[in-house]
Picture (tube, rainbow, N blue to C red):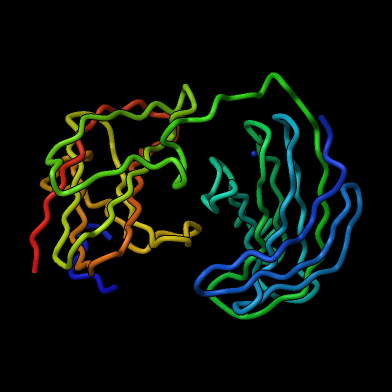
Length: 262
């Protein structure tokens, strides 16, 4: 698929396990990691280190990574679909060390989660990594019905405008929509909001770790106005994510869909 134009470009854990996790640009390694231990591992563009664990409740996961050389590391914690959790990224370069990253992140409910260890820009890296877990039931947040790609709201060419809202204070950090193309053509998806600052992103099916295209241009000087225009082919699926520039904000908005067949 080509883009034509972009306006704006989850009790106790017994172990963490590295699992095979495929994305279009990189295959993940497979290796086990027990909580409370530090192990050696490696990551690269072709074999991204992706650690998976099963949470039996809500809680706090702490992860610490240190490169054994001069590599620049990034830590990312995602849900089962591969989308980053709120505050789930560390690229702090702690103490001025590009390979020093750590974070303590809230796991909102029981489920499968991933910790990815990537390199900044490109290349490979050897590193040490350890993790700890604190189960904390009071941190439980109910699942957002449209908060992940697997529960995305279907949208189609027959829908011109959809009224929705996000509210980070209640755990509704973003909304997901999925468009399935019955025929080839040009698709435009736009947001309109009188208040609040929105971000509109599009993802390819099966790769939700990083947006394919992104709009945060505040069209015509309005922070909630964003748009993406893409060329699609018959049978393709596109996933759109609407979020707030300020995490936790409450923003009512309209999603507008336009399609021109070839």
